[in-house]
Image (cartoon, rainbow, N blue to C red; front, side):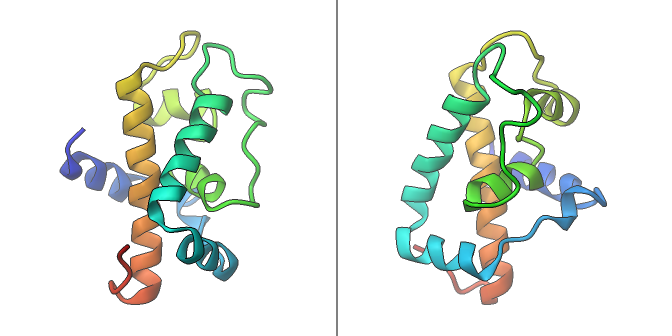
Length: 128
């Protein structure tokens, strides 16, 4: 998926009163700075593949914590926290495993959200 469509989707999500409430804490930002964006991206792939990508994820709708890792916060901010939200916001149907391109899209969306959050706080100066 092109960067412009990720940007458009993030802008759309940012207009949601509920989705726009999610913000990275200073602890989350420090974790990102310590680990680096590539490691965070690896974590995003691990979390999406293990918690959301299967046809019928365990505890769907309750599998993504509201805190504890920057990716979890980003999942709520990007409506990629459960299959119901993924279906509603991104049009990816429930009841079947996510394909590789869909997982790549979700991770790109999560990373775009995280980068926006970090850049916003750092005045656009953060890049690794």
